[in-house]
Length: 264
Image (cartoon, rainbow, N blue to C red; front, side, top):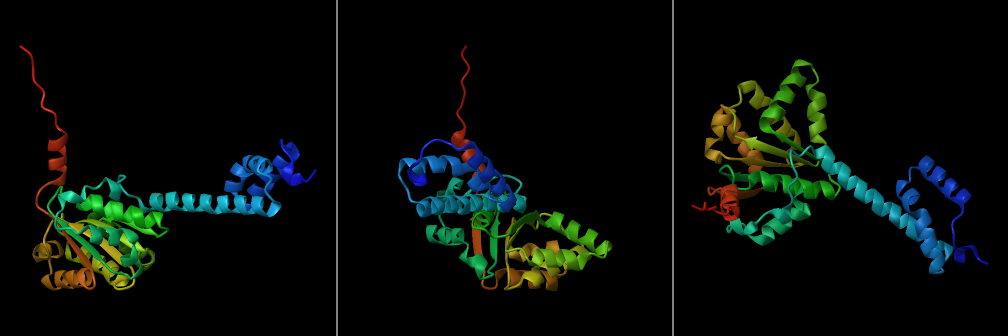
């Protein structure tokens, strides 16, 4: 009888497969090879077809693990996905624009994205959701707040490791920078942040969210010329989305709130 049509399990073969997969770093095949072999035997698959099945399974498994790892490495503060965002709350945002951003093509071109709007209007949701989509597509993504990044850069400069940190950020495919404009930066912090922005200019994308219009960024970066330079770099060939002034969170909370009545 051809081995390809045998049924049942072979403990020695299973052990050998497990050991070989461990040595070769093939956890997907180690997980599914035996059950797939039983299926192949029932379906009378050829050796080549079975081999193609297990190798394809390993490739798919690696893609899944890579997506999970990329999202974990991004350090998002919470899970947000595009399908959970009610785009109807932003009538001025064309569906085609959001669909285009979801593909990540703008990231491959090194184009920036700026999300402007008041607190609660969905900026951070979109920032994290687009970053998550990019990470799941295999890109290297990093989320951070402006204050946290500036603190990291200051500490790196004090430790004479600034070049290493700037180079590390320069290699990220997408930098998600949240809370631009929430805190006023001193001159040193603003200049260090400008180094990161300059290092990525037209080479790697930055997506940032701010509750302040561009006209008020001078209050964050203190030096009007530096603020103008930052705005110039984050808008050139960029995508700008205004999420408005009406709180997305407040509308969602109000819609889900069910008034209660008390009996007398």
